[in-house]
Length: 67
Image 1 (cartoon, one colour):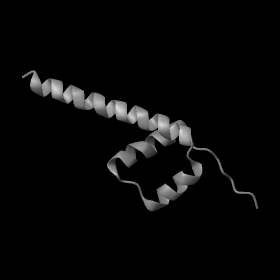
Image 2: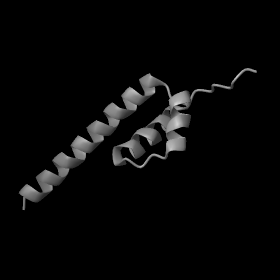
Image 3: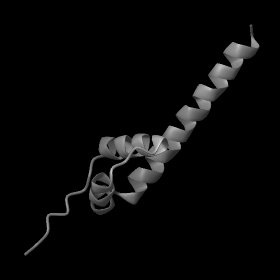
């Protein structure tokens, strides 16, 4: 019996990283992700997520300080 180890898309990786930032991943999702996700996609998605988060923080600080 051959298991169907289909790789997840990059957008699926982005979704997994997004929910992981909030800490809202179910155990069943984690088990599915560990078999399907590409580590390179996860690293790239995490870097994009961190850049967006830092950009959001800088924008909020600029808006608050400018008033």
